[in-house]
Each structure stands twice: as C-alpha cells, then as structure tokens.
Length: 139
Image (cartoon, rainbow, N blue to C red; front, side):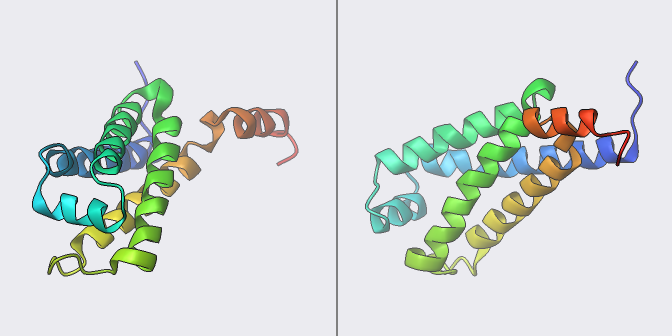
C-alpha cells in the first residue's frame, strides 16, 4: 500500500482541481456556447481552435488523473493556459462578455496549479528526475 505524505496529498488536490476546471469548460467548447464561439471568432480560430483546444484540454485532464502521466498532463495544461493567458492579455482582454474576468482567473489558477504540480513532481520528469537521482548525494 502506498504511503501518503503531504506532498502527495497537495499534488493530488491540485491535480483534481486542474482536471475539474478543464473538464468543466469542455461543455462550453464542445456545445458551441456563445461565449466560446465569441472567443475563438475573435482569435480567428472558430471552430477548429475551439474544438482543438477542447480536445487538448480533455487529454490534459486525463493525463493529470493518470499517475504514470501526471507530469505530462501538467505540462500540457501549463502550455494551454499560457496560450489562453497570452490571448487574454493581447487580444481578448480580461473581461469576456461581462464575465468579470472569470475565464482569465480560471486560466491563471490552472497555470499556477499546473506549475506547482510540476514542482512537486519534478523527480518524475524524465531528464530532471534522472539528474536529481544522479546528484541526490551531493544535494
């Protein structure tokens, strides 16, 4: 039986939160909700950008919830949210159709939580993990 420590509990809490946010927004992307269509039309990427980003977010959520691929999912979510944040700051603005900045805030939360997951699980990232194991005696 696996022993749970504080680091594992924090990581899983963050993983569940990130996956939950990503999965919750899929409904709007895949059903063509007016706000999603507006966002991707403004970006010049409707409908392929909306559907493609939805598929990528679904993949990230699945990877985050699969122990062997958690760091890949976190890295994918981090990259997706970097794009979302960049889009908000350069084209869309913070407030989308009167949402009070909710979508921007969710992107910041997912970005920050994904970065934290990568820090907590840095030993599982292939090259970093190999380096940490090789130098653990000198650290």
